[in-house]
Image (cartoon, rainbow, N blue to C red):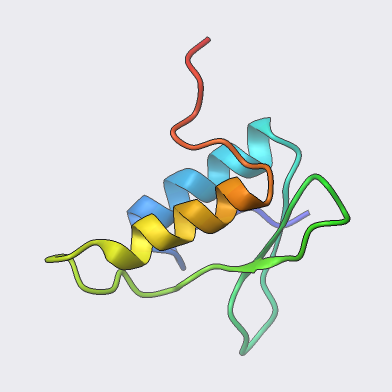
Length: 81
């Protein structure tokens, strides 16, 4: 099983690690392609993980990506234990 690493910007990496380690998601990176997150619910579609941070001024890219995670059953920010 792959695990998110330095190929992802820090904000995206933090979310991906939480999903993989604590929420049952799978992470896959294939040579020459974008990394992909697979939801714990196999009926939901996979989600491509951006490898560039995008425009920091608006932050819409990251927020939209997190919204897509929530649509697929993920939780972010993570619940405190």
